[in-house]
Length: 470
Image (cartoon, rainbow, N blue to C red; front, side, top):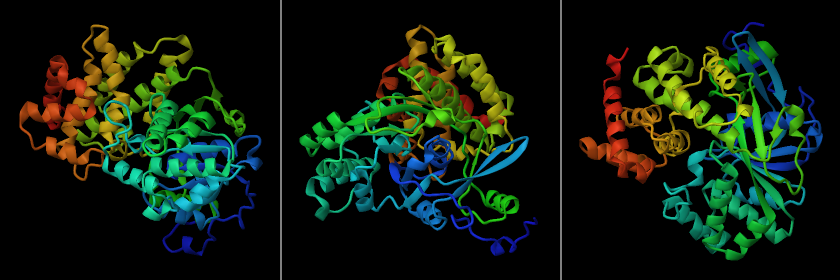
């Protein structure tokens, strides 16, 4: 089939009329309707042996666009698995309702429904509104505003943060006496279930101690490690689906063939048979989380900042740069020395990452990975740096990631970060004062260690002249 401009307009729009996939009842409510959720949790749910029993109602985050496009397709979309060997195409139908996240009434109704058993989250690290101490930042303006809304009831407005909406939904479930359920965190945070629990209880306690007690007794928070590289969809991807499949899909998802999910926790109201699709359930998830957070996500952040400073746009381009490749390998050496246990199979994991990162047909853009750096570095660089320092070593490779970020913030335009205003203010300061202000936004303890500041300063100076490093 030709894919000339204008010809795809004559193709039918993807819907359940042309792809007769049944709709399962809503038993999962998801927050954060984006490409990753659709390539990962929704994909796993479709591939579960009992998929016909588990439908997903997925709510967007900041904007309604994704829900509007997906709703026009009855929730259907195409997953394009892309590798150097070619593309494969699969229509996913596990999302049975796509909703604007601002529709808090519908969200609360679904969370309160007795059939709902799970709430899954891909709201990004920054959305948990954690301060540098790892606790909910009750002084963040949007948190303060949501607490006022929650304390005042529906007449005072609607919560705008994911946490505020989640607490509102859980309050509705308590009031409906709908029973226990599980919250499954799928964001790149160490002990993410524990983090989600702390954030939710922190917001609930701030205005209703009784609600906090009910959540503590009735809601389990499941920790997970999630993994599938899912770049942003382009117009060319939409055209490729039309050419290959004979229908128009305005919301396909491109992903690598590799997919992984490790979960730990209780599911008091049940769950899909995700293990049928390869998910792994473990008692102790921390080693798997750290392996993924440090080796994959840490390398991604390092490539995002160092790679862009050196003029690269994608992960594959940056990895092909000897300087960036050495920086990644050095960081992996440091991180791996703090990842004990043969079960983790670190050498094989590293080899697989090199192959995955080098997939030139997955255009994983560095600018996308670079978002929310001040929050991500706490999970991806700090643990390895702290472990190395505690062992009496310099932690230079982990410090290089932080140094690259400090250099990147001075050159980036339209920086997207939960502390963007503070970063901009820090960048107006001279010399070492600037560096200390930036490090303090990641973790105040960094500033208190003159050795770390000296190390990051030296490494940052090399990045400031990145154009000469080629």
